[in-house]
Amino acid sequence: MRTGSAFVLLLGLILPSAHARADEAPNLVYGYAQLMNNYVSRGLSQSVGEPSAQAEVDVNAGAGPYLNLGAVRMAWIDKLYPGDSVHVEIDGVLGYRVLFSDGQAKFGVLRMQFPGRYIAQSPLLNTTEVFGYVAWKGMSARLNVSVTDAFATPDSRGAWYLDLNATHPFGNGWSVLAHYGRRQSRGTNPLTGADNAKLFSYNDYKLGGARDFGHGWSLTAFYSYADTDPRLFTLNNYNVGGGHISVILEKDF
Image (cartoon, rainbow, N blue to C red; front, side, top):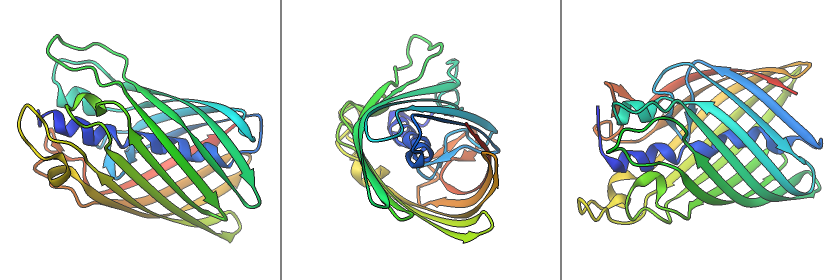
């Protein structure tokens, strides 16, 4: 089901949350791999309810300049643009990290690439954002701002996403997590006259728990909800907004 280029802007801006897990590592090189029943990021199901896999590596996870590379399976492009064959997102981050007592701060540039086969009338969705991040004692805040037209949506430069998270440990490897996100659209689509800010801004929430089993293995489960309009966020009869339950098995290395 095609819902228009504005939906591309909304789905695309869910991507960067994959980078949060590498923020905690003090080692020179850090990585992880994940298997999940449903890839939900920024409140939206990027895998459109399908299982997904993700891998990421952080080069110089200590203080100073760092490089982050990640890949994840997604499904929304093929469903938004029938005839395309695009199943993987590849992200690259070039940033700078500052460490301080019980926390850290980061800023940098995120480039999102969507390699694959596109039919002639489909737009290229590659997008660049700048970001700032700060974490302290289990709490974190991150702001991403698009510096290009976001995911081929005209006049969408400057759209942003605020990501607030809190984690509290309970001992024996158990912890609880909570998240609030705010997506703020920008611009007016010159092709349709639609006001992106009025139509496509939303809030999303997440609450869940995690268990660390040791030796790099962990399991996370959460419920997420985005107050999106299902008329604008439905692909192939699946509402990528609204509520979702996700379970993630992770191995760190």
